[in-house]
Image (tube, rainbow, N blue to C red):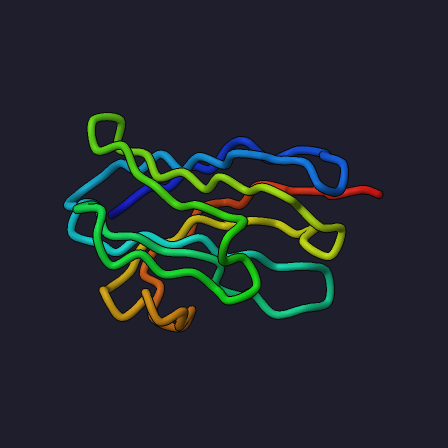
Length: 124
């Protein structure tokens, strides 16, 4: 089993920044590809970004390229999502996920483990 715990969500003004954290623990979590997804009210959960624990194979959704940065700290077993220039339409619950390497393509159906989510609210 792998446990994922997100933190760092909150209320921010449009154009502002937030950094989300995902602390991983459990059996063999470092074998998984790590991703961030988000789900807005009434919408499907969508892929945002992903990374391997080795630091390679970074992937981003087109909508966040150039504004969001995913990274990891292996010593802290934590994956981060730095979000800049946030937009009101990016208000959503953000979830950390772990799955096989194909997760880098953004396929949520292959996710093996989900975190509980953290709310991000972007206001005008």
